[in-house]
Image 1: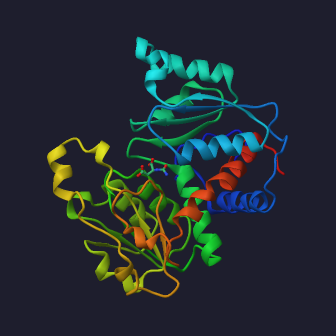
Image 2 (image 1 turned 60 degrees about the vertical axis):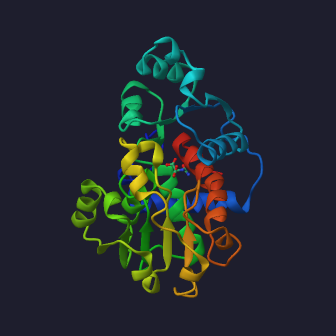
Length: 307
Ligand code: NCD
């Protein structure tokens, strides 16, 4: 189906072929990092109703390197929603000013809602706990760059699988490929949501739920670690119960395979020991840097242009 003119709401809207095409274009931009004029007639709106460092700045960098103009805001307080305007009217304005809308919001379904209102392509940069498709794209791209393949590897997705949209989207993204196995490692309170497990079952992906990284470390190639999503807990007492319940240490990683890599969508808080950062296991800063070529590839394919 390709990307041209499409909304990007969930990674599951795309096929393996789509992603392979995206990755090839991202490879090109990674090798040829310079300023382009491909999107010079485009305005890209970055509508961030929730905090962001990497997603927003890498989208902005990507859009600017492609020659597009960038408008947007970084919090709800900066918009007329603070005066009582509806989200729908705000979206209509973004649609009028821009050509591509990138949106992040704390509520599930906001990106889809925006896509229904806007004529322009809408890219979901995170909707509550639900989806974060462009994060999954760059995460999968990172695995492909590190291992030369996404298929046949064993993955452990660790942490807040209940409220973490990056974790859920990464798991969904893996179902488009042929992972050998996925371990879902979390405290019992933060197990993956039923719809995520259902997708794994439907798509015939082998998986196992576990509570401790220690129990699975020897078997994994990719350890995808996530932060506990404190801000999404309806009950602070529940958060207190799971706070600090897992920590990835160098000692733990040394029990694993030699080629083991640790990915993390970032921000990390205390779930990875700082000593890991400078070890051969840490791939998360490289992963974050791939946000630029992958989002350049995405924006240009949506606009229907190729480098
Ligand atoms: C993630 C998010 O916002 O969902 N961050 C990101 O976009 N890289 C993960 C998180 O906040 O924990």
